[in-house]
Image (tube, rainbow, N blue to C red):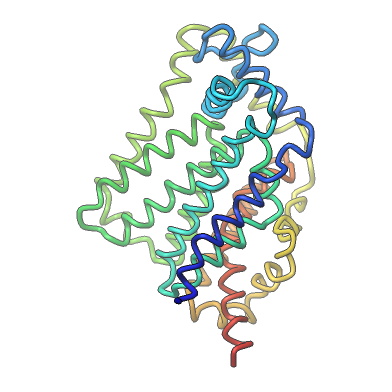
Length: 340
């Protein structure tokens, strides 16, 4: 029997254990409690576009993740925390799926997509976020899907409009999950790396599909903000000012706070750190894929996120995604080395 026939069921089994088993071991944290309360009031009041928390309007976060929580409550009730965390676990599985598909576009090696998926599934921050009903896992999962479709569309070039439309839809879903956060921390670093590593000609060739993608993303992203502004203009402006001020004054950390980002890989931290040693890692990883692209993606993400005064460890999830890819590429090199 071909060992590769076992990769998919083993990967699915791994994700069941990392994302689902005993995911109610920890009590709901503050952010989860807010999400659960808002979802409960959505169901009670049947008010899905103007969410409330403890009876007061809550527009600090877009509603898509809360919609999934409310729908889960409708199906399974409000008492089983494990089931209520199901949407976050499914979003994590979706994220791993998109990583798997993106890796297939980055390399011709058949083993690497499975290694990347396995590495991501066991990375500390991804594992943690899959067990929390918060907004981050949703917005970054959708944005990673958009990145995969963009990458796929740029490679194909001909008859690729459907990929750019799909990317626009997923970008809109990402915005409805946590506003522009993933655009800045995940999409921009990817585009920067793509332009620098692949010389940027692909976007000029695909100008029309790119414009269609942007228009699609704008239309979907604008649905909820336009609605709440039309209904509650003064309160919406107050929340916008409050959130923008929080980026500057809340949870302020020094510029170098994110420089320990390999630690968020958990058990992969040592290998992840080695991949960032440019002279050593590049010639070993280039055998399987474009080291410059992956390293630039990681560096751009850390740099852009470091520019914001507000910093939290969980905000490093967009960095862990390309870090999982480059770590797996180095792990693939080690597998061949030990065989020899």
